[in-house]
Length: 220
Image 1 (tube, rainbow, N blue to C red):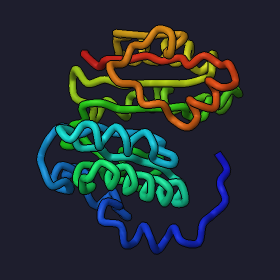
Image 2 (image 1 turned 90 degrees about the vertical axis):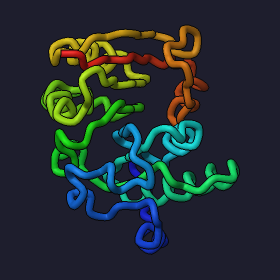
Image 3 (image 1 turned 180 degrees about the horizontal axis):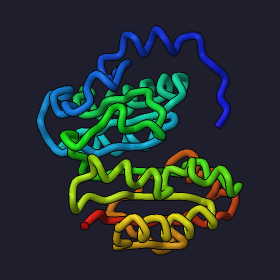
Image 4 (image 1 turned 135 degrees about the horizontal axis):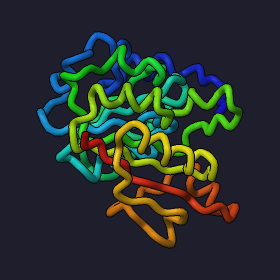
């Protein structure tokens, strides 16, 4: 997604208590970043942060790390998280936002950073053959996630793109994950106990596009 740079982003992120500027410094010790030691969940490609804001505020028993590459997106995520927590009369104490190239996720996480669950929502489908390895669900990426995803941990995946969905099911299986739930129409046949509708999800649904989703479990 292309988004116009906002001048306020740099300063607001610099002053944000739940923004980590250099995530590589916390590799292997992410549990120490949070106020409470509790299970960690990870969102890859958090965008404007509406999903992670609502997920984190409703689940105080988990800590959340939200990653994006674009500073302006993280700026919007910061503001949205603050707004959601303020409306809930809570302080932001269980979510961290940070900037990282997800293809290089192992620069910021290792086997000591045990992640319970990974969320991937409406990632770039990279439809052209030579670009498919850039997909966040490609086998190349899944092998990286297995370094820090706990045994029995899960990946929650949502997309509007048919090709990406079906090829991702194969990627999961090829990489040793078990598909424990899947749907070709999430809103008619839900598979999540709690589905937080993202900005993209609303847009695609309004266009009449079914939302595809699955839960893949790493159990090997």
